[in-house]
Length: 235
Image (cartoon, rainbow, N blue to C red; front, side, top):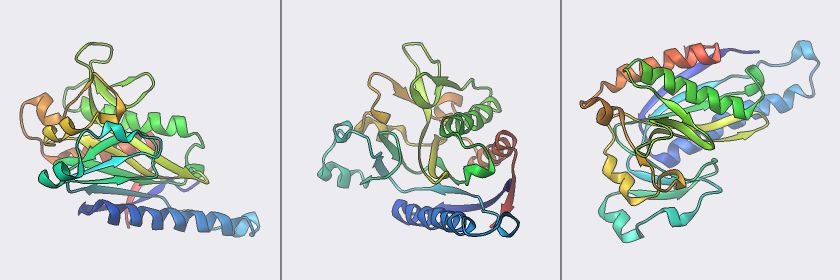
């Protein structure tokens, strides 16, 4: 079991380019796993793991089981707000990516960790919950609603981190979108994650001030290594 994770921060990158790159890394792992089937145990190749940080220009992404009616604006309005829309192969419904948001894409061979997608999602949530605690905020889970929330069970419950993944042969891609200094007005144009009657928020909004994104990234990396019992190395 390989607990080393090759880390890259790609910075600001087009969504499609990041999606294609994730696909390449995922296929690299899958190809090794398929080759290992033909090899005796002692000759099998250790599968790598990857973790990407990215930031995307304004874009709305719809999961494979999502409802297009949760996009509340038309193509013309998308152009006016300088945003794109794309259907993806991840789970979940519709979400927004944009400036001031930390997007994390773990491309992991879960056979190096635990082969349980439900637990994997809970562990991703735990990483963000621990990160929020560093800022004095109580992040929580909402039953049946993947992601991380504040004030769960109250009328003003609000989501701060959306999640959606794809897995094939126990290899993951896609991940989480954590609102840090995000322009929240872009969420007005969708029903976020297809959940009606609940709000979204950001670290900036909760703390009343801009937050150092690099500091937040460092905290996410620290807690990811704690939760997944792994070590980051440079790719």
